[in-house]
Image (cartoon, rainbow over all chains, first blue to last red; front, top):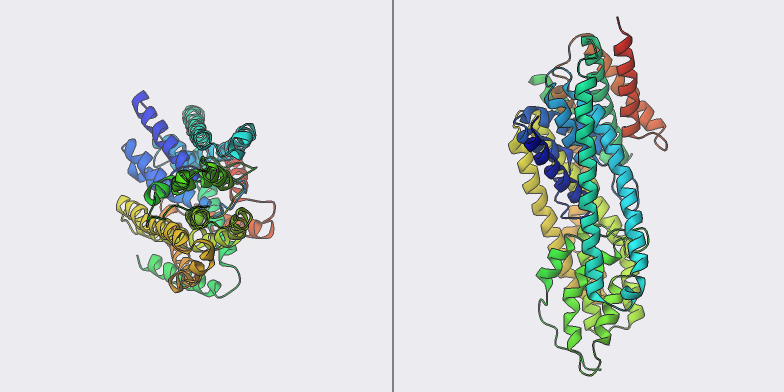
Length: 225
Length: 255
């Protein structure tokens, strides 16, 4: 993969990481968006869509409320698509899932570290903030956003390096049965996480009946295709 | 103390644009407070013109605006508009603080139900269905457009409603359209995601044959059971990493 493509992926991953919490929260951070665009950058929309759908299911396991800690699947999906691109059709999903889940975990840890850095910056500026210094307030806010952009770039870069390593050392190491097992594990975990996450949201009330109706309808459409 | 005339929309658009960054400085001490202060500041600039107070009212209001706050990011505008309007209306400082504190819970809860557990998974599920049915990239772009129509409309409504109602902002939360949307979003989400799951399962398992499909059914059932019964300890991420590690080891050992 050329350096130019890697730079484009890094830029896209940084935008995606920035969108998750800081600005503008328009959901390009959703794997379903991050993946296909990464795929389009690589000229492989199909792989991007597959991994986007896979990680979107993992995303259903997360409710981003308040101070909760959660993995970051946006830049992770970009890295996953990069890893799977070279092995599309065979090792694609499994290899992408390995790289993406590790990057997602690193992204979650980096968000916690960023929030601690922001807390320290706010404490340092406490006197100016209590004095109603609007300029200081704006500078503090802008600096935090720049810090988040740096964090997103580092997480994406880490994921892209991991993708290179995985392609180099894992792609040829597994026999066909092993490749299929890895794909089964990736798809199975994603479907289980998506179902469990949705059912936690739905609860035991009337929503459960709507969910069951949806599953029945979806299954009929799938069977008819 | 003389108060400046309140214009219809003093800096509302600038405030709205800043609200898109409201969580940019999220931290464990003031949470969204700094972002709220930044978004509220354009609405407070009229206070600088107060005769004979040398900007004291403005600075005090800016300082209050940056205090602790945490709610759903799309509905923060309601608190920003209401607090700014209350400052213009000469509401006592402690009452403005109480108003902000009182809004955290309801705005968080409403936004979580309406957006995180409603509109977002619903529109995402529709896009998943589109991709699974072969629509490809247009389904994804459709998701971005449709989701953000709701997103931007909600942010704009919240800011305007907050500015309109001021300290009586609780009335805005009782608007019939908002109540209906909140009531409908849960069932619609359940139906949409429910329909998406079998189609997505078919889409992702397209390359698997024979024993691999049987193994997939077992992994989904077992994984779901584990996530359900161990929900306090086990997350989708941990399950995924564990299953991939086991699969890699088994695949490597398989003759």
